[in-house]
Length: 211
Image 1 (cartoon, rainbow, N blue to C red):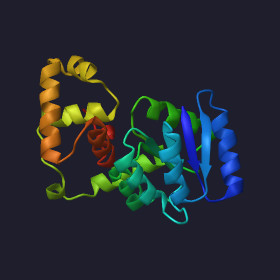
Image 2 (tube, rainbow, N blue to C red):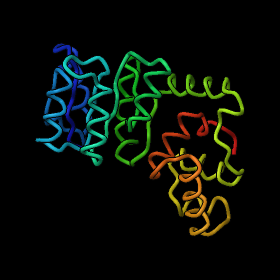
Image 3 (spheres, rainbow, N blue to C red):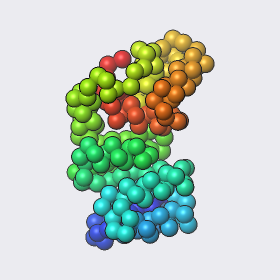
Image 4 (cartoon, rainbow, N blue to C red):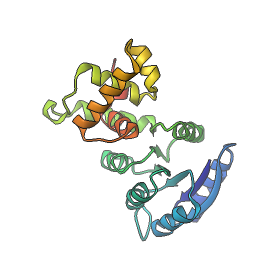
């Protein structure tokens, strides 16, 4: 996995580089100290993954994320930050982040996050997931999108990284039926693509809900 690392603090960036290089399939191909440089590097190096802090000079990590997702949709972005409040996490997920990792996470969690991103799954640090769930529990019923029980089940399984065939087997229905549920979900929620559905499900705590 070819990675561009964005962190404004040189010493911290060097420490992160060492951690990443301990992952056998990770290769740091570029480092940026500000958002504008990050965006230029992505366009020039075409990495598989960008790992970025939120607070970057010139252009914030979130602003860079929006631009990367718009112009280089095949490049995944993992946010690595100490700013794990709900607003920042939701903003990152809405902008297309592949995950959000807290800087307070254990080093081993980095490898877990990388493997999840490689499988096209969305990864959130457990502490962040709990905050998302707490927010979901505090929502008013009218603020939640209205989906059918079967659609909700499909959405929950998507959030858990299940493929269409796996979902069909677990629900005892055909692959075509699952695809129909997914298409109707995207129409109801105003989302496009499985990754967008996965981010929505995680953001609303559906991956933790009982099926």
